[in-house]
Image (cartoon, rainbow, N blue to C red):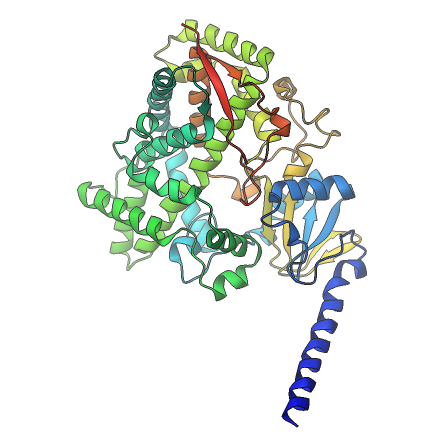
Length: 491
C-alpha cells in the first residue's frame, strides 16, 4: 500500500513538473518572439562553462537577426534586445523602469549586496552620488599622476625582462592593481615591478578559477534566487577579510575632515564612514568595504584585459602601430616626455585605438536590467514586471551594418562618430560605468609609454587576434590563453 502511495505521489509530481515545463517552454512562442528551444533544466544557459557569455550573445545576434530574442535563465523567461533604438529606450529613455540590474548577490553577503555594481535603488542612487565625487576631472588629476608613474615602471619591467616573450595579462594585472592601490587606497606599492603586493594578493585570488567560484558567479548573474538560497559570496571570504584589514588600517592611520573636499576614493570612503558614525550608521562599515571591493573588481581585471588585447592587436597591426607611434612622438616633442598628460591629450589616434579594441573585445558589453513594471517593448510585445532584459551591445559592436568588416582591427573607423547605442563597452544611461574616465587614463598612460619605448612584435606561430581563444569558464570577455608578444627597444 505504501509503495502505491509513493508511486502516486511521484507520478503527480512528475505530471505537475511536466505541465509547468510545457507552460515555460511555450512562453515566448505564445508572444510571437523568436527563440531557440530551451533545455528542460538549464533553459538557454547550456553554454555555461563551455562558452563565454559574450560569444553566446554574439551567436544569438547573428543567428536570429531580429529586434529581440526570447531566452530562459533556467526556467525564467528573459529578453535579449538587439537594436540601437531598443537599447536607447531601456538604458536611457525608460531607465526609470529599468533602474536595477538583474544580477544580485545574497543579502547574507553585505560586500556583494551593498556594492555599487549590484545594489538596488534607492540605496544605489545615494551610493552612486557619493562615490562619483572621486571621479570628477579635478580628482582624476591624482590618478593621472599615479598612472604616469606606474607606466614608467612598466617600461622598466619590460626592459629588465629583455626581448623574451612576455605574458601580457599577468603583467598588466600587476599594473592595474598597482594603479588602484596607489591612486584609490593610497597604499605604497611596487606591484608593477615585482608582481607582489597586499592588494595583488586579493586580485590573484579573484582571478583563480574554481568550480565553486564559477557556480557562485553564475548564480549571481543568472539565478539570484539561488544565490540567496545558498548564501553565495561576491568575493572569496579570504579576500574580503584581507581587504577589510587593509582599509581598517588605513582608516586608523589617516584622518579626514568632513568639511574638506575629498581627493581620492579612500577619502570618499572615510568621509562616508565618519558621517555614518555621526548619523546613526547611514552607511555601515560593510557598505564602505563593499564600495572598495566593487571598484577593485570592476576596474583592475577589465582594464588589464583591455590592455592585453590592445597590445596584442597592435603587435599584429604594424601599420596602425607605426601611426600611433608617430603621433605620440610628435606630441612628446611638443609637450616633453615628462608631461604624459599633455602627450596623451594631444594624440587623437590613441583614443581610436582603444575604442576599436574595446569594440572588438569589450570586457562586458551585454548589459542586464530588470523591468520594475509591465513594459511595452513595441506594438507587438509587452513584457511582464520582473522580466530580465539584456541589451546585446557585444552583438551590435560586430554587426557589419554598423561596423563594416567588423573582425578587422581598424581604428580609423572611430575618426567619425559611431551610430548611437551601437558601441557600449562602458554601458550607457544612469548606470554607465562610474570608472570610465579612470579606466581611460590607466589605458592611455600604459599604451603611450609602451609604444614610445618599444616596437611590439607578434611571437612566432601566435594566433591572430580574432582567432585567439576566449575564456570559456569566466563571465567577462577575457583571453582564454596566455597571449604573448615581443618588445624591441626603440632606443
